[in-house]
Image 1: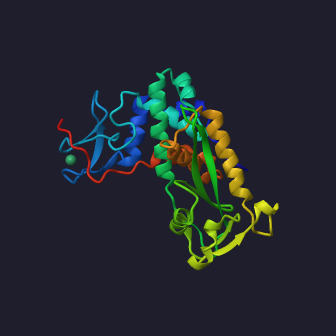
Image 2: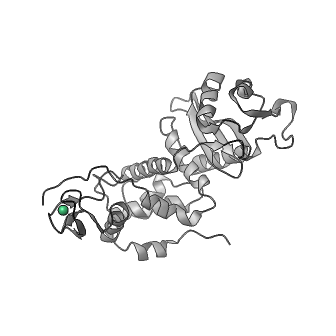
Image 3: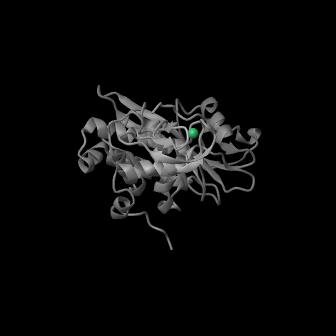
Length: 297
Ligand SMILES: [Zn+2]
C-alpha cells in the first residue's frame, strides 16, 4: 500500500495558527525541555509573550527558533510559510508564484520570494549524496538543454547534467558545457568508483573506464536505444518530467535560478517512494545553530 500525502484539512488541524507552527519549530530544533545553553541547567522553555521566542525558566535566556531558517526576518506569518512548504511537498509538477499568490492572498513579489526560499531549502535538505558503487545499480548519465530564449530573443539554453542510479537517487547539476573536463569531474564527485555507468555515445565519457567505472554506451545516432542493461531511458524520463514541471508551471526560468528548481525536483524524485514523509522531513530538517541567538529579556 502506498501511503499518501496528508491533505490540507489535516494540515490545518495540525497547524491551526502561527503559535502552533512556532511550537513545532521549537520542538524539532531544540526540544521544549532541554539544557539551556546559557546556564546549562535542564529547563522547560516558556513561550515569551508577543515575541517569537522561548525563555529558560532559570536564567531567562531566549531562544528564537526561527533563527537560521528561511522564515527569519520576514513579515510573512509562519503559518503561510508552512502552507507553502505543504504545497511544495504535495504537488507533482511544482508550484508557481501565481499559485502561491492565489492561495495565500500575498503579493506576487512575496509569493515569488517564498517559492525561491523553499526551493533552496528543499535542495539543501536533499543534499547530494554519492550514488552507485560496485554493488549498486546501473547509473545513467546524460545531459539536457533547459530553457529557451532570453528577453532579447537570443537562444539561452542551459546545459544540465544528470546522474541517476536506477531505483535510487538522482543528482543534477548546471554545467557550462558538455566537454570531458566539465562532465567527468562531476561524475567523480557524485558517482562512486566501481559503478556501472551507462551513457550515450558522447565522446566526453570515453575515458570513464580509466577513472574506474564500468562504462557501457549506446549509440543514439545509429538508432540504438537499449542494449541489455545499457540504456539511458530512466534519466530521459526524468528529463521529460523536469521539463514538464518547469515549462508547465513557470513561464520563464533563468540560468541563475535554475539550480534551485533542480534541487526542488531532486528532492521530490528522491523521496518519491515516501510522499507521506516529504512534508515532515522538510519541517524537521532545519539544522540547529551551533550557538543560540542571545536576546536579553
Ligand atoms: Zn538558562
